[in-house]
Amino acid sequence: MTNKIAYPKAWLFVLPVVALVAFNALIPLMTVVNYSVQETFGNNVFFWEGVKWFEQVLNSERFHASLLRQLTFTGIILSIEIPLGIAIALTMPARGIWASVCLVLMALPLLIPWNVVGAMWNIFALPEIGLLGQIINGMGIDYNFTQQPIAAWFTTILMDVWHWTSLVVLLAYAGLQSIPDAYYQAAKIDGASGWAVFRYIQLPKMKRVLTIAILLRFMDSFMIYTEPFVLTGGGPGNTTTFLSIDLVKIALGQFDLGPAAAMSLIYFMIVLLLCWVFYTLMMRDEEP
Amino acid sequence: MRKFVWLAPTLYILFLMLPIYWLLNMSFKTTNEILGAFTLWPEHFTLDNYIKIFTDPTWYTGYFNSIIYVVINTSISVTVALPAAYAFSRYRFLGDKHLFFWLLTNRMAPPAVFALPFFQLYSAVGLFDTHFAVALAHTLFNIPLAVWILEGFMSGVPKELDETAYVDGYSFWRFFLRIFIPTIAAGIGVAAFFCFMFSWVELLLAKTLTSVAAKPIAATMTRTASTAGYELGLLAAAGSLTIVPGAFVIYFVRNYIAKGFALGRV
Image (cartoon, rainbow over the protein chains, first blue to last red):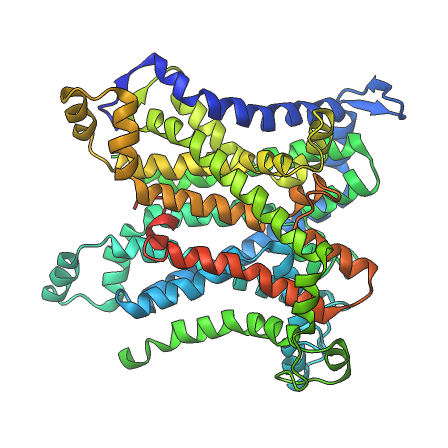
């Protein structure tokens, strides 16, 4: 938008939003910053510690392990959900009653509270009483996600694919809807193959919405807490303890406020940094 | 090959429905049947689990609590986001781009980071265990989202609309309330849908900020699971009921849902 009017008083319009978000964001963030540089032995007595907690977190094996697990998890679900979501959007009906039916059914998992998603998958995948557990064991594969790390990962990833692929489908579908029919007719006249239509018409037109999809899926999978916590409790052992689960364990479980606060800030910075990198990479050739 | 294209979405939807079916299936079984034998459908069909939820206040108040804070949150978020989104889509002002980005960074903040400070903040201002606390806490990620969606929809409305209205002698607020808001009604619906959705599904903050009086249904479920042993049928029934409001809301916005997910800026 280049034709916006300069209007300093527009700040008044933004003021309520700024006030509310600042109350919710700045005060807690300052609390976290305070804790991250201090040591306490209770009774509200604090000692200045400088960057000790940051060094401790950055050098701890435990943090490296959760970060690695988190990156692996996010990498896997992005590489499944994005292509799968595009494929479903391309094959589902483009308009009419069946398109609406598909959209409504697909959106359903997005509106189920996250812990219900975890609980639902728990009883769906349990080897004794769950349908999935029974089917996999029935095929002769020994499967018990509460005890085997690989089975736990498989179940957690399958759950996330179940939960969030629809978001990618809906976004990609919206992108496809914005392509005028004339483009397809032109491609037909030129005798373009199905792949060429996808590569040179559909994919470029979906770029904007796919950027949003990748960003949203990256952010949300990087913050994932409730679903794996309810499903596996971070176990067996620590094998599915992602960053948020580990953070809550340290902060509310062990009440190690200093390290937890330092870890929070590092965690937040990683999310911001990666989002920025993604965004600039994907928008790089957008500018004329 | 072209003939079997419908197979992919059909299989996908089947995959989506299976765990939901399993949850419903469990909710109509007795605990004995669940633990005793593996059955694909309830053989001793029972409504006891649902009756228990609708008659026991510790269960049904959970639903009211959740719905109350979700509605408060949605109203606050959309109301304050409207003028802000208008300012972002129409005007240049000091720090507008930075401000917009700063708002969005709050959508990126992991709730786990804020759990403990929120607990302390809301205890300090005396709002702990109220619906209002959860509603306010959820504005952290819902206001940025609402501003983002509404700004997308508003930028799609030509500026000539505003200018014509001013020429016709409309005051700003009269134009905004009588002409502009009806014009972007679909966008408001979509923004409200998203606020509803993210407030309804979030649990970490909602659980941290409540203990008894405003406890959300989802937290009631986790607490029952840990204290009263394994009442799976009851849990499944409670879980099934949490799907209902979502399904209801989707039905209302079904025609805008695709555009809404693209945040109004396809």
